[in-house]
Length: 125
Image (cartoon, rainbow, N blue to C red; front, top):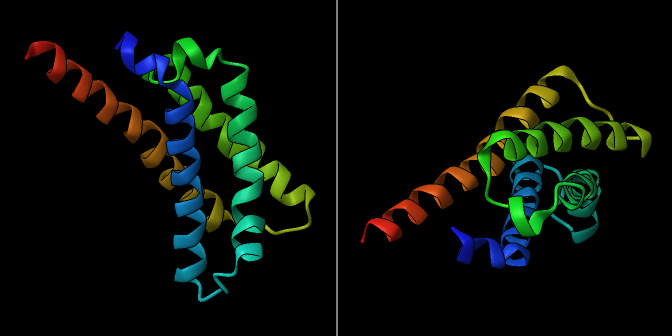
């Protein structure tokens, strides 16, 4: 796992891409424009929140940890991201909040679970 942690900028980039995919999926599901500006407006607050949460968590050590770091990053990304979204003038209806929490949980925690399983498999071989 140490080798994987050294690649923390790559893991950070993968997480950011997953957040952008979340925004693209949401915009396309609701037939919103998939323009770069529209995607940035949707993903931006969550990317900013994610970066804040990750950078305060010492990512060079913790980027792939599920507990407690991964869960805190997930919760913080959702909470701060929703706050920023509202602060930037967008809405956050209850269904959006639920879907956001579920999808970002699947993406951010799921990526860490997959990383952990692959690291264990690599060590076993």
